[in-house]
Image (cartoon, rainbow, N blue to C red):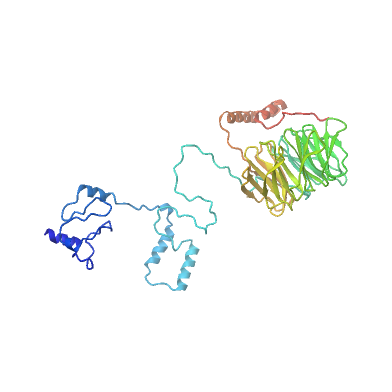
Length: 509
């Protein structure tokens, strides 16, 4: 009986006529029995294992444990399954007759119109990996991960739609003018043809500050550091200083022979750039206001920016020249000729004192970064469009550039990697002017399509700890302060919140 069981389990013994065993062996590498050993109840060991096949007897406890560990289950993920596609594929599988080409094409068209996939698997274990046919490959394909115990900050959202849009009729379409500026008192000044309008960002009120007479038009506007006074440059060469609170003109400083297209304040000194290539420094405290004349440009000066410490002045002109001036000299400290178009966009870094960014016009389209201590060019960006302005972020290591032809957009860059974060299609026509809100979070853009738009790009991170509590207390104090309490209380609350910069006050006569 034992011999018959062995023969039934191991076969007849001839290798060429061997039949499949009654029970399939899990290891296909078992050694076949030789003809000499056929019919004998011997155990044949499997390769690579220490287990033996017992014939005619009960399996050992160790063999039971081993066989139990071999089982596995397939648990499909219903959330990852497309039930409509699965039912469609099951119905197709039931049809035995092969379909001709026209019928198959018709079925594929119907499936595509119904939004089902013909070749999709019925059961799925996890989400399928993205293919090159998908529109957005930036979505991460991964299994759901466990939440980390450490708190992670949420990514800030940068919207490509403006928060507010205002009309700006009469905005002069001229690349070399500077007609927009935002004060520390939250007043936005914009020059429209012969008038200057002020928009109160806190209340939304708009009123006209001044209107020129004759054929003169507004060529530039610039607020003082404390937001009390506004300088206005005209096409006739005059520079006017206006008190924003009383809405009255304080003084007029004449002398330029052509339009004043750009200005920059440094405490009580106002620098103005002229069409004839000259730069004048005006001391607004004295009657003889002209204190210095800086001559190094051969064409119109369209970019001016004082450094925050008042030591260096950067100027750019339509002669494709970038000059860096020392405040104590009338000769440029050094000049740069790398730009191949007008240099209008100039911006000093708020968190690295000697870092300057400059942008060129239509035939240049580059932004260069300079170390003004070593005079070295640190890096460059080919933006692909006319650069009209550069704005650094105070809170992030980032900068925004505004552009004209051909894309008329805003671009956000990280620094120092200079990787582009996002492109924002801002206007239908070229973006001519930009200004930053006092809190540094919102950027206003004015374009030749006669519209004024506001973009929340540098949204502040939520503050935690003592600094956050102090800011919250200050904000609550300013919010609950009655209007009749007087200017002193409101000024103290605003100063505590860090809204106004009154570290270097001055008086204009």
